[in-house]
Image (tube, rainbow, N blue to C red; front, side, top):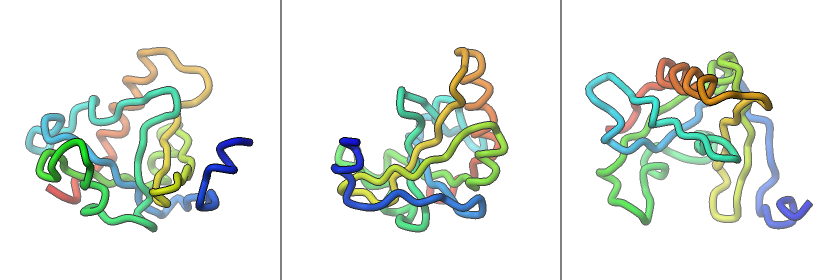
Length: 128
């Protein structure tokens, strides 16, 4: 498969006890409330970083915006899977920590919102 050729790092199984980190724009967080918009899904899934290979400070860095634009949330992999979602390590050439939270095969728009609500309930902000 072409993606296997392009990957510089092997894919690994992310253990349930490990932490996933998600960069969240500040506009999606008000006090202790995290908007469902903090967990958007595209065709591949919702991108996160595996804390085994990254820190909250590294996750917050991006070329698009200054670090102050973002907060970083953490999710336990096992709790994410208990929500009915898949978690897949998907390293790319410049990011060994890259992973995806993926929707189940069959889903309707209202199902996606339910998954987003579940993710906000298990997410803890670890870097303001």
